[in-house]
Image (cartoon, rainbow, N blue to C red):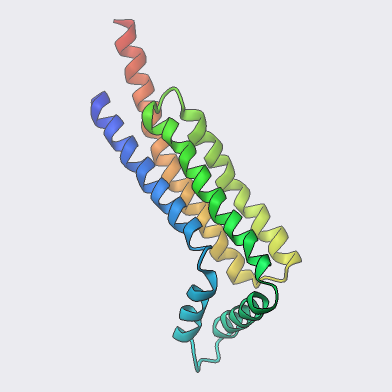
Length: 165
């Protein structure tokens, strides 16, 4: 059985990993056109469905940014939202047992990725395989947070046993 200190350390490591992933996934929205240009160059001269999709998205975003740069402001807010959500994890980092609701809330948010990806993805005519890629963020997040949550439950149990003595 792990000590409460080793559990706290493990929980904090998982939370930091999740915070970094969340911030990185958000920050990438700031430079989306540049990133898509790079991705498009990797698929140049290929005729796969994926290569055609990436090229279409890049050309559309590039042209939209030329004609309507203010629309990219929505991506700035998307990045900001990721960063703000990451900040919420500070509470769970400081006191995991007391703030385990943050982990529960974010696990629910990870589950909500699926209906969003499949409903909005279908409405916006996003290819199914890309909807699955979007769902992978929910799966990865859910796995990371579930591991963290189970460790918090272990810490909570140890804390309760310690307080009974």
